[in-house]
Each structure stands twice: as structure tokens, then as C-alpha cells.
Length: 151
Image 1 (cartoon, rainbow, N blue to C red):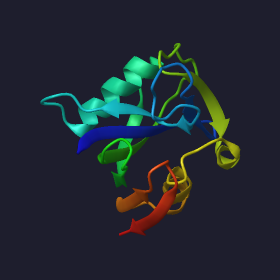
Image 2: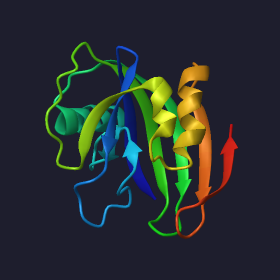
Image 3: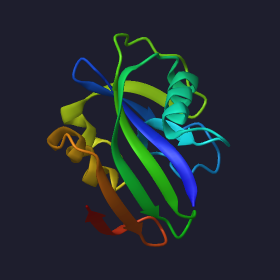
Image 4: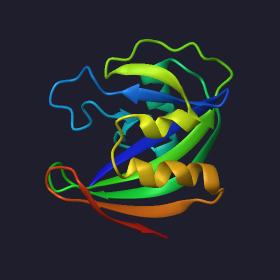
């Protein structure tokens, strides 16, 4: 199982979103997601999240908070355990990202973006819950969400 982090950075009522449109053979191609990536050897989830944020955006964040544990069952790409974070920043100046186009998107407009179906399950939880939740997202071959289990 792959270990990854995913962070939604807040600034002025927006989340920083990454449109995955630059890498070849990208399982996230065409989707808008938060920033994050794979954990490196001997790296904690927090260290990974902060490293990925800096690498992908150039930002320094505050209030990094673990919000959820996501278990992705993905027959096409292999299963993944993702540590889901939110953070804040005082700056909206971002650097270019090698993985896609970064944009500050008002939170109320994010549901209109091309998202993974599972993201449509957990993104509202970031607004409605303050606790750390666990969510299992089960996808069918081809990428359709077939089940979600929140605990």
C-alpha cells in the first residue's frame, strides 16, 4: 500500500488546488486535487506534507492539521493510505508546479471542478467536521467510485 499525504491550503476563503495537467501517465490527469505526494523513507506524514507543499507551491504554511485518514482501494493503480491535512497561509504567491497548474479556487466553486468522486465525499467533511475522520473509498476498475465508508 502506498503512503501519501494530501493537503488543502486555505487563504481568503479559497483552497489552493492543483490541476494535474503536466505529467505523462498521471493517474490524476485532468483532475483538480490538493497538494501532496508520496512519503519518503524515514519521513513522517507531517514532514511529507510540509516538504510536498514547499516543493509544489513554494509556500510556508501555518496551522497544519491532520483532518482525516483516507484509504483508497484502487484496482487500476494499487491501494493507497493518505493522510489528509488542512493548513493556512498568509501569502497567495505561489511558484510554478511541475505537476500541473495551481490556482486559488473559492471553496464554494470547487464542486464545479473535475474532481475524483471520492473527493466529493471528503471535501465537504473538511467544512462540516472538526475531528479527524477515517474514510474508505472503493473504486472499480476504470475509476468509478462504488462505495464509501466513513468512520
